[in-house]
Amino acid sequence: MSDIASRVKAIIVDKLGVDENEVVAEASFTNDLGADSLDTVELIMEFEKEFDIQIPDDQAENIATVGQAISYIEAAK
Amino acid sequence: MEIKRVVVTGLGALTPIGNTKDEYWEGLISGKSGAAPITYFDTEKFKTTFACEVKNFDATQFIDRREARRMDKFAQYAMVAADEAIADAKLNLDQVDKLRVGVIWGAGIGGLETFQQEVLNFAGGDGTPRFNPFFIPKMIADIAPANISIKHGFMGPNYTTVSACASSANAIFDALNSIRLGYTDVVVTGGSEAAVTIAGMGGFNAMHALSTRNESPESASRPFDGTRDGFVLGEGAGALILEEYEHAKARGAKIYAEVAGGGLSSDAYHMTAPHPEGLGVVEVMKNCLENAGLNPEDVDHINTHGTSTPLGDVAELKAISKVFGDHAKNININSTKSMTGHLLGAAGAIEAIASILSIEHGIVPPTINHTTVDENIDPELNLTLNKAQKRDVKVAMSNTFGFGGHNACVLFKKI
Image (tube, rainbow over all chains, first blue to last red; front, side, top):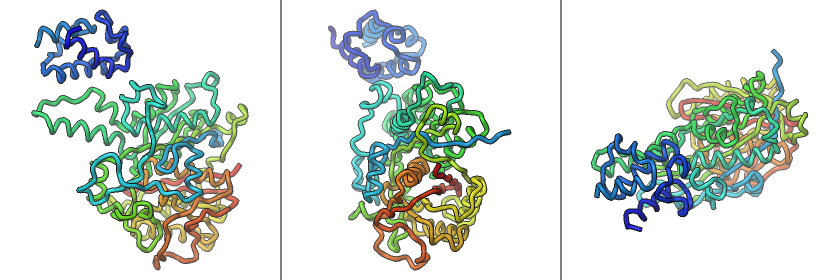
């Protein structure tokens, strides 16, 4: 697992209070990991802070799974 | 319209002198002080360096970690106290009509620590407003009853009353009236506060409202004492289950006391100073007695607002003498803030609980830390100094007054 992937997963485990094993690439924040609309906003903000990047709202809307978050951040770095 | 009778069937408390209703009562009758040096932040530059914090509290022992993270401390305290009260009332949540269960809560401020943290984050940044999406819903004062209703599915009236230190007495009176008028069968009421923060301590210090007896925190809250120098900030929550009398009887509930009435008034005088003759305070106690259909001579015990401030304590006792006349000297008067400190918006709730437990146990908790007579106080008044007193309390009154001149009073009766 890449460094980015493990940091993304750590944030998700911390913020959503889910088990690490559930945080797989295809897991959807809302459907699989129990996030609501406020949680997803917070996750995006945490990613921005952790990786020192900006994720515009129109692109944040397309980040719905763990894998999509990792890919987006890897491309943005 | 038939006015219904209302009783108390459950209690919960999370206080600086005990984390459950029973521990709280033990603390009260043994004269325990909850004051100690502040552990939450560095107080080196603060005029007051102590407070009455809740001790040994880990929210995640009671609330799912993820949920707990979405709540300010004032909301966590509310949830824990409300859960204890609901369990204490032995309410069968599968059998009650949840459309007729309300949550009417009191908080003077709300999520002060959350507000402080978010603003500090912003101030430490580059001017980009990167506020957490939970900032507003964690902070707002109404979120405590919202969380309680979300957890239990209570779909009746749901709101927070805000009248500074009178907030939760306002909430209890609103809960009483909601059931009296037939809008609800059961109301979870009470209040919570968590203002032992940089902003809370700094703000109250700036008003010269707090005791600065840093060398002796435990003896700093000394209501009615000649050397009192301000209140001691406390935090925590108190919860009460109010229930329509027939509803409670039908399910065989334990009944602690009847909520006989309440009173409200305003000083219409000053933002923070009490009226020197206690005019609004006289009115609120009169209102309360009239609302309860009782005479001054019926009252055995008054749990005063008694915050340990130079002006407020004397004004309140003068008002009591005015309302109760000769009978005032027969009343067991106390201030449990001498032990708990001042829980602001939660004060009315935990003091109502103390009054109800006085009725239940036939004991009036003491006003601790009294050493020096204040010559402005009538020596004939029984202020229940330093030691709990046995007393068959049939009727107990609980006074609360808030900055802004808000006065709220509730009255409980043995049943």
